[in-house]
Image (cartoon, rainbow, N blue to C red; front, side, top):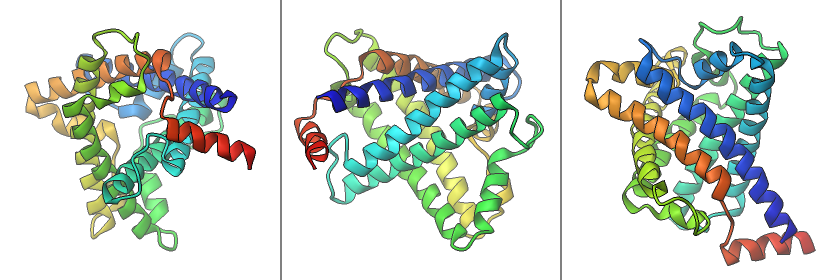
Length: 266
């Protein structure tokens, strides 16, 4: 059980960092004329008092969450299985893991002054996508990332409708958790669907340099009025939900616990 406890602690630190990023993301989207997305949020954190230290801590948390997501997809932490649906869900989790690893690296690079992007203004995601497609097999990998986000969007829809994410939490989680979780997952479904479609399109015949992140998606949605407001508010609520996860996330699946114990014995 010690390994399970360590994994829970690892996950909770990651959820805390994710919560901070999404709350600020939603807040800035609702109160400013444009959205820089998650990388823009990280730049805003850097400009706060003691921002370098806070950004470094957030970066460590995001790296931890990315590793947790990738590891969870590998060992099937949430018990999705090995059928087509389960594999699709785990691919979506892996895509989320890679995205958070990128954000964590970006945050730590900015906090330590080792980033080469000159602080922000450029299309970081587009540069990363262009670099990827220039590598052998990079176009195929970029396409898989796009598909991963599309699958993740479907998974967000499933969670928003079913509310089955509650089984991941302790029973004493606040009563409002299911409502803010559903709103947050619905907002993420919209963002991930647009993002996945854009990335997949860039892989198969598009311009990889035009690939953007959540900020570009939000800016594209800005002209849609109330729909944009709902998505932005939903992202803020997802941040609140992530803070609840940071406090109440637990691992109770007996099959998962048994596999973790077996890994320790081997």
